[in-house]
Length: 177
Image 1 (tube, helix red, strand yellow):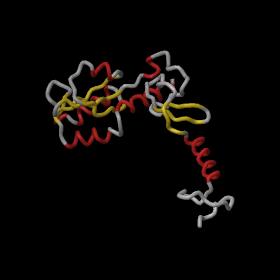
Image 2 (spheres, helix red, strand yellow; image 1 turned 30 degrees about the vertical axis):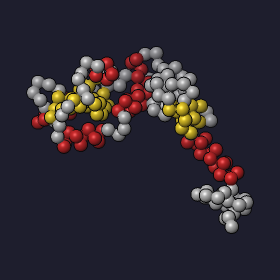
Image 3 (cartoon, helix red, strand yellow; image 1 turned 30 degrees about the horizontal axis):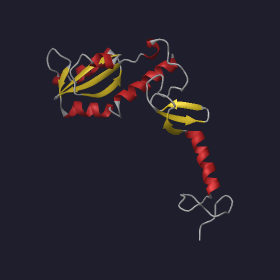
Image 4 (tube, one colour; image 1 turned 120 degrees about the horizontal axis):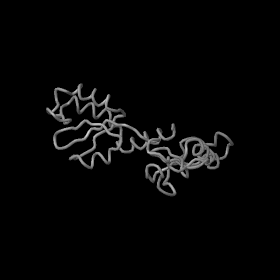
Protein backbone atom coordinates (compact mmCIF):
# COMPACT_ATOMS: atom_id res chain seq x y z
CA UNK A 1 0.00 0.00 0.00
CA UNK A 2 1.22 3.48 -0.90
CA UNK A 3 2.00 6.03 1.74
CA UNK A 4 -0.47 8.94 1.85
CA UNK A 5 0.46 12.42 0.61
CA UNK A 6 1.74 14.48 3.53
CA UNK A 7 -0.39 17.46 2.41
CA UNK A 8 -3.74 16.06 1.33
CA UNK A 9 -3.86 12.37 2.25
CA UNK A 10 -4.18 11.16 -1.38
CA UNK A 11 -1.87 8.28 -2.34
CA UNK A 12 1.73 9.48 -2.67
CA UNK A 13 3.24 9.20 -6.13
CA UNK A 14 5.22 5.93 -6.43
CA UNK A 15 8.97 6.49 -6.36
CA UNK A 16 8.73 10.12 -5.23
CA UNK A 17 11.46 11.12 -2.76
CA UNK A 18 8.82 12.76 -0.56
CA UNK A 19 5.41 11.50 0.45
CA UNK A 20 3.53 13.76 -2.00
CA UNK A 21 0.85 13.07 -4.57
CA UNK A 22 1.52 13.96 -8.21
CA UNK A 23 -0.36 17.32 -8.11
CA UNK A 24 1.68 18.43 -5.07
CA UNK A 25 4.94 17.22 -6.64
CA UNK A 26 4.14 19.24 -9.77
CA UNK A 27 3.33 22.28 -7.64
CA UNK A 28 6.69 21.93 -5.86
CA UNK A 29 8.44 21.53 -9.23
CA UNK A 30 6.86 24.74 -10.55
CA UNK A 31 7.97 26.58 -7.42
CA UNK A 32 11.57 25.34 -7.80
CA UNK A 33 11.65 26.40 -11.47
CA UNK A 34 10.34 29.85 -10.55
CA UNK A 35 12.82 30.26 -7.72
CA UNK A 36 15.93 28.69 -9.29
CA UNK A 37 15.13 28.66 -13.00
CA UNK A 38 15.29 25.82 -15.48
CA UNK A 39 18.43 25.20 -17.51
CA UNK A 40 17.65 24.84 -21.19
CA UNK A 41 18.86 25.88 -24.63
CA UNK A 42 18.47 29.60 -25.31
CA UNK A 43 16.09 30.59 -28.11
CA UNK A 44 19.15 32.11 -29.87
CA UNK A 45 22.85 32.46 -28.98
CA UNK A 46 23.68 34.92 -26.19
CA UNK A 47 24.30 38.37 -27.71
CA UNK A 48 27.17 38.91 -25.31
CA UNK A 49 29.20 35.66 -25.18
CA UNK A 50 27.57 33.46 -27.84
CA UNK A 51 26.64 30.59 -25.51
CA UNK A 52 23.53 28.56 -26.30
CA UNK A 53 22.92 27.43 -22.69
CA UNK A 54 20.46 29.46 -20.66
CA UNK A 55 18.39 29.51 -17.51
CA UNK A 56 14.68 30.23 -17.94
CA UNK A 57 12.86 32.10 -15.18
CA UNK A 58 9.25 33.30 -15.20
CA UNK A 59 10.64 36.82 -15.72
CA UNK A 60 12.80 35.83 -18.72
CA UNK A 61 15.99 34.13 -19.81
CA UNK A 62 19.58 34.57 -18.60
CA UNK A 63 22.65 33.16 -20.29
CA UNK A 64 23.93 30.30 -18.11
CA UNK A 65 27.55 31.24 -18.90
CA UNK A 66 27.74 35.02 -18.50
CA UNK A 67 24.29 35.78 -17.00
CA UNK A 68 23.51 38.36 -19.69
CA UNK A 69 19.75 38.89 -19.96
CA UNK A 70 18.41 37.56 -23.25
CA UNK A 71 17.03 40.36 -25.38
CA UNK A 72 19.35 43.02 -23.99
CA UNK A 73 21.90 44.23 -26.54
CA UNK A 74 25.57 43.86 -25.64
CA UNK A 75 27.32 47.03 -24.51
CA UNK A 76 28.18 49.54 -27.23
CA UNK A 77 31.71 50.01 -26.04
CA UNK A 78 34.37 47.36 -25.70
CA UNK A 79 35.63 49.37 -22.70
CA UNK A 80 32.40 48.52 -20.86
CA UNK A 81 33.38 44.87 -20.77
CA UNK A 82 37.19 45.12 -20.67
CA UNK A 83 38.73 42.61 -18.31
CA UNK A 84 42.48 42.31 -17.94
CA UNK A 85 43.65 38.77 -17.28
CA UNK A 86 46.86 37.01 -16.48
CA UNK A 87 46.94 33.95 -18.70
CA UNK A 88 48.72 30.63 -18.41
CA UNK A 89 49.48 28.85 -21.69
CA UNK A 90 51.14 25.48 -22.11
CA UNK A 91 53.41 24.79 -25.04
CA UNK A 92 55.07 21.39 -24.85
CA UNK A 93 56.62 21.23 -21.36
CA UNK A 94 56.66 24.98 -20.70
CA UNK A 95 54.13 27.48 -19.36
CA UNK A 96 53.83 31.12 -20.44
CA UNK A 97 52.56 33.65 -17.92
CA UNK A 98 51.40 36.84 -19.62
CA UNK A 99 48.65 39.44 -19.51
CA UNK A 100 46.12 40.79 -21.99
CA UNK A 101 42.61 42.19 -22.26
CA UNK A 102 42.02 40.28 -25.50
CA UNK A 103 43.20 36.68 -25.09
CA UNK A 104 41.87 35.37 -28.40
CA UNK A 105 43.77 38.02 -30.36
CA UNK A 106 46.92 37.63 -28.25
CA UNK A 107 46.96 33.84 -28.48
CA UNK A 108 46.71 33.97 -32.28
CA UNK A 109 50.34 35.12 -32.33
CA UNK A 110 51.66 32.71 -29.68
CA UNK A 111 52.61 29.08 -30.06
CA UNK A 112 50.62 27.04 -27.55
CA UNK A 113 49.07 23.63 -27.07
CA UNK A 114 46.55 24.54 -24.38
CA UNK A 115 45.04 27.49 -22.51
CA UNK A 116 45.50 26.37 -18.92
CA UNK A 117 43.86 29.17 -16.91
CA UNK A 118 42.98 32.84 -16.58
CA UNK A 119 43.49 34.91 -13.47
CA UNK A 120 41.82 38.27 -13.16
CA UNK A 121 44.55 40.91 -13.07
CA UNK A 122 46.79 43.27 -14.96
CA UNK A 123 50.56 43.80 -15.27
CA UNK A 124 50.89 44.12 -11.49
CA UNK A 125 49.60 40.59 -10.95
CA UNK A 126 51.60 39.31 -13.91
CA UNK A 127 54.82 40.77 -12.44
CA UNK A 128 53.94 39.25 -9.07
CA UNK A 129 53.59 35.81 -10.71
CA UNK A 130 56.87 36.28 -12.59
CA UNK A 131 58.59 37.02 -9.27
CA UNK A 132 56.82 34.14 -7.53
CA UNK A 133 58.07 31.63 -10.12
CA UNK A 134 61.37 33.40 -10.96
CA UNK A 135 63.43 30.27 -10.25
CA UNK A 136 61.61 28.51 -13.11
CA UNK A 137 61.82 31.37 -15.63
CA UNK A 138 63.60 30.80 -18.92
CA UNK A 139 65.90 33.86 -19.14
CA UNK A 140 64.72 36.69 -21.36
CA UNK A 141 61.21 35.25 -21.83
CA UNK A 142 57.85 34.96 -20.10
CA UNK A 143 58.10 31.17 -20.36
CA UNK A 144 58.62 28.98 -17.30
CA UNK A 145 59.74 25.44 -16.72
CA UNK A 146 56.91 23.29 -15.40
CA UNK A 147 57.17 21.99 -11.84
CA UNK A 148 54.80 20.85 -9.09
CA UNK A 149 54.45 24.30 -7.49
CA UNK A 150 53.57 26.10 -10.73
CA UNK A 151 51.29 23.24 -11.78
CA UNK A 152 49.48 23.42 -8.42
CA UNK A 153 49.05 27.20 -8.80
CA UNK A 154 47.53 26.76 -12.26
CA UNK A 155 45.29 23.92 -11.05
CA UNK A 156 43.98 26.12 -8.21
CA UNK A 157 43.04 28.81 -10.76
CA UNK A 158 41.36 26.39 -13.14
CA UNK A 159 37.84 25.95 -11.84
CA UNK A 160 36.43 24.99 -15.24
CA UNK A 161 36.71 26.21 -18.81
CA UNK A 162 38.84 29.40 -18.74
CA UNK A 163 36.88 30.89 -21.64
CA UNK A 164 33.58 30.52 -19.79
CA UNK A 165 35.10 32.22 -16.75
CA UNK A 166 36.32 35.10 -18.94
CA UNK A 167 32.85 35.46 -20.48
CA UNK A 168 31.35 35.71 -16.99
CA UNK A 169 33.91 38.34 -15.90
CA UNK A 170 33.18 40.39 -19.05
CA UNK A 171 29.45 40.18 -18.45
CA UNK A 172 29.89 41.30 -14.83
CA UNK A 173 32.08 44.22 -15.97
CA UNK A 174 29.52 45.28 -18.55
CA UNK A 175 26.68 45.04 -16.03
CA UNK A 176 28.60 47.30 -13.61
CA UNK A 177 29.33 49.87 -16.36
